[in-house]
Amino acid sequence: MKRLLLDTCVIYPTVMREMLLGVAQTGAFQPIWSTRILEEWARAARKIGPTGEAQARGEIALVRATWPNAEVTWKPSLEDRLYLPDPADVHVLAAAIASSADAIVTVNAKDFPRGLLAEEGLERIDPDTLLRGIWDISPVAVEQVAEKVRAEADRLSGETWDMRKLLKKARLPRLAKALG
Image 1 (tube, rainbow, N blue to C red):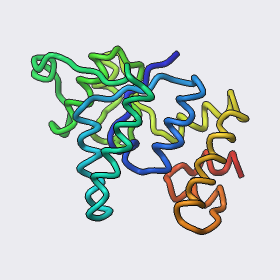
Image 2 (image 1 turned 180 degrees about the vertical axis):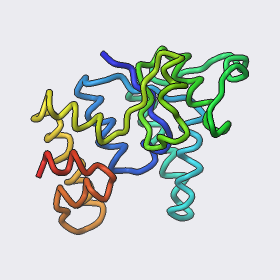
Image 3 (image 1 turned 90 degrees about the vertical axis):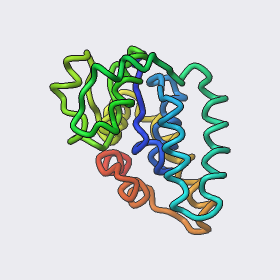
Image 4 (image 1 turned 90 degrees about the horizontal axis):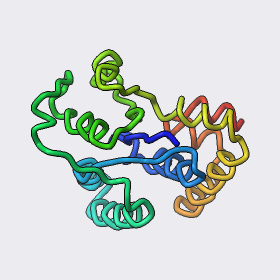
């Protein structure tokens, strides 16, 4: 099973996170993160209002309970030898290396150059490509996850979401087209 480090930018948007973690629960891959990545999620959730961070911390507790072995730590000296265009992202690369991840799942391509990742035996993949690829192998499993995510979006918003529109809004256009 592939081990995939999830960057904060794919965990914080709710629909994207729910799709990724729902598909991970089917056994398609093992998600990995660090304490700092989860903390960045909690802090980013402040943007949605005064209860955003508290809600995110509750969700983080559930994620930690669901995947007790997903959180990775490393010696600080690991970061000292690493370079990325944005030094603030070095912790993500360190987490991927420390966990023996196969790839980093991110939408932040410019700050994770493929050449630098390859030097560490890592790939970079965006969540839409990842999920579309898993759909090619296990369409029913991905469709079931997507339907659960859509139903929850309906419940939370009080409106009925079209699957394609929901996934496109979540920056998953190839998956949206596949699920049509």
